[in-house]
Length: 202
Image 1: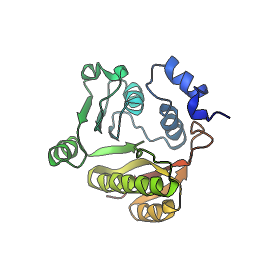
Image 2 (image 1 turned 180 degrees about the vertical axis):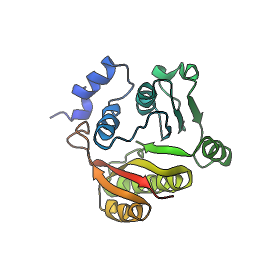
Image 3 (image 1 turned 45 degrees about the vertical axis):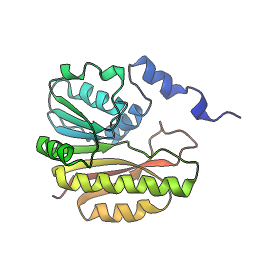
Image 4 (image 1 turned 135 degrees about the vertical axis):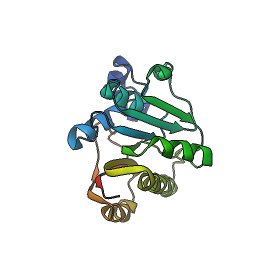
């Protein structure tokens, strides 16, 4: 039997029709519909942005208002090739931990929302993959604490495996509300979920 990863599904076809480079865009769309994270005129940061679906969706929602910064080691897809035409968008291709990248991104903040769909390259070993995912999320959380504005929101993808509870406990010390959420657009066999935190206390 073929895995759903091997053939285009409803979400993949929808993404292609609507001009998004990946189906993951509908995960963010559902998260925002439920939690109302995008504020008109707000400033946002997309960590691990490639190939660009989340960034493109946010820019379309902002409609020329507000601001989006994005960072990834990889370049963005052709759908965002004309990104400089968005006056409210800054993409940095580089290492999130490089001092020059860090300085520029923090200088562009503070942000009303930090979003990350970043995930490690999978090995097939679930324990190894879960550990790598947890390490990425911990870095995203540390970033959010440094650059979120009071009242801001955080969304971060994590592979399920037990670390979610301790991460959420830590988030509850800094945010008014925290919960896990798995959008319908996640593939049935996927063990990914999202941590959603709102009301950053600063």
